[in-house]
Image (cartoon, rainbow, N blue to C red; front, side, top):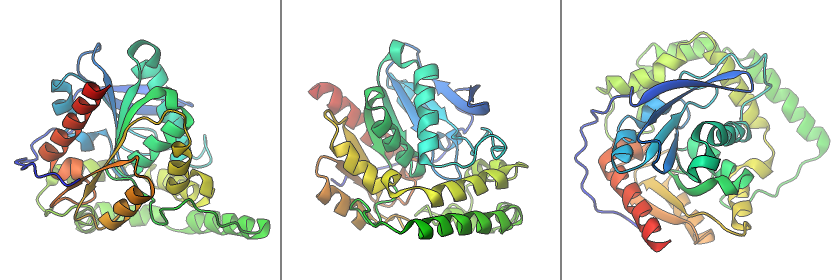
Length: 323
């Protein structure tokens, strides 16, 4: 479904929304933000690659003002959360982040007291959200994936390789990323105009003058252990089995006895994950719902936040009415 809501956003939201807090997961420090009345239904916002809870600068307060308790978590390796990970864990991937999110929902959001949560994720955050749903469906009330990454093959991946090939691939991936000079590369991108070029690929509108957005991405990238975290992500995401990639997880969710409502929100101008992939995904899994936002790229929540917020709130209101 394509929405015709007119967006009049001016991108004035503050990345310092809500109250800033820290929590410990597996001896790793996790930063999160929270806003809204404690008695209200919980929403957890999960950012995409290279971003943080700050990236929900134009969404969190809007959701809180409509009667929700809103949390924004920094996944391990991102934002203000722990980046010195390699001495404590071997790698980072969507399964690890889903485990982090499960513990966060159980311990901080307090599932037993406040009930099931609504997860809203952007890209990598959406992949983490559906992985969390597969692991612990009893925690999740609904998911909004804006957009959902890894629908490249759309169908579950069934290719199998010999054990020797898998071992060689793992050895090569570790060798490559341990030798590759990630720190100089991160410094080059984050401290030059290359950051504008990199960010622009995720947006349809020009972000050349959006200093706030650049700060949200570059400040964490300039921390001393950013390259270590990125290395752990590169190895972890490259070494995953097919069973924990997006298409396979969606197929597994389909087999759940009680599937929570899932809404996909896609920018029509998304260059990273084109809209035609979303349409193929919907055709294969018609139980998923799709909303398309014109003139938005890979980050519709930040590019056209007023539009995005209205779609989310209307969908949640409709769910409440129909339940």
